[in-house]
Length: 407
Image 1: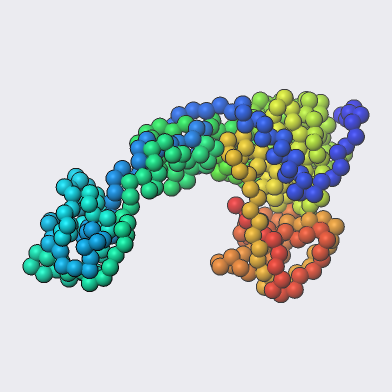
Image 2 (image 1 turned 45 degrees about the vertical axis):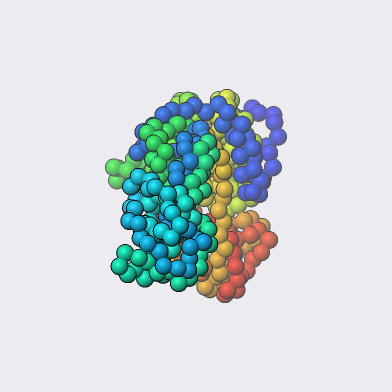
C-alpha cells in the first residue's frame, strides 16, 4: 500500500506543543456534546452539563456553630437566667430578652435577639442561671442565614467532574437527577502480527494483547465507554475494515504500526480513510512516532505499540482529548516535583518519561531500571514517570526533577 498524499509531513513537536494542538483542536467540539439525566447515586465521576444553583439560602436561618449558650453580647460578662434549651432540628424559639440565655446545641437555630454564642466550656451553670466571665462579640459562633450561599448562588459550575463533595451539595439541595454529558464512545485497536488473545498461549515470538486492556481501563477511568476491537494484522485488508469500525466511534486510539517500517501501515491506511494528521512525531522517548489527526470531526490517535510508549502518550495526548469530549472544562497535566535519592543520567536531545518510584511523602524519587518501553514488569513497579528534560543530562542526589503520576 502506498501513501499518495502530497502534503508535507508536520514537524516533530515538543510534548507541550503537541498537547496544545490536541486541546485547541478538540475544545470547539464541546459545543456539540449531548447530555442526559442520571440518578444522583450514579452521578459520581460524571461531568455536569448545567450549573447547579441554591434553591434557598444556606443556612436557611442563623445556626449555632458550637454547643453553648445563645446570648446578647451586650449582656456579658454577667449572670443570666437560662430560659431553656434548643437542639438541632428544633423549630425557631421566641426572641431572647435582656438578661436571658438559651442553652443551644451545634446546628440549632439561634433565636432572634441573640447575637452571639458562648461555648459551654466558658460558662458556669448554677441553679438555673449561667455565669459568664468573659466578653464576646456580636456574631461570635453564629452561622448567619445565607452565609454559605444565598438563594440563586451557583454552587457547582457546569463542566465540573463531580466528586464526593459535589454529590453532597446536590443531595443537600434535593437534586434527585443530574444533567451530565453523555460518555464518549472510544474504540481501541491494537495492531500487529505478533499479538494474540489473552486466553491463548503465546509462542516465544508472540505477545498477549496487553495494550488494549490497559488503555480500556484508562478510558473508563476518564469517564468514557471503551470498546476493544479485534486485533488487526499488519495488512491493508485487515486494517481497513477495523479502522472504519473504529471511526464510527467518537474517538479512535490505535496502537502499533505507526513508525516508519515496511509493515507500519496504520498512518497510510488512516489517510486513505480521510484522516488528516496534525502531527506525526513528538520529541519524547518513549513515544516519538505518536500521531494525532482528525476525520469528520473525530479525533484519531496513533500510539506506538510498546506498553510504556502507549501509557505515556495516552496520558500526554489522548487523555486530554477524551476528557474534553466527556465535557471537562479543565485538562491539566499535573507535573509534581521530587528530589532524586540517587544520581541519575540520561542521553539528552529528547524529553524522556522513565518509570520511577515516588516516596510516600511525595518528596523523594528513585529511578526504576528497565529494559525499554516493552518492559511491563518495570511499569508495574513504578507509580510515576520522571520527566528528564531534553537539554539536561545529569542530576545529583537531592536535585529536583518533574514527575508525572502513572495513573
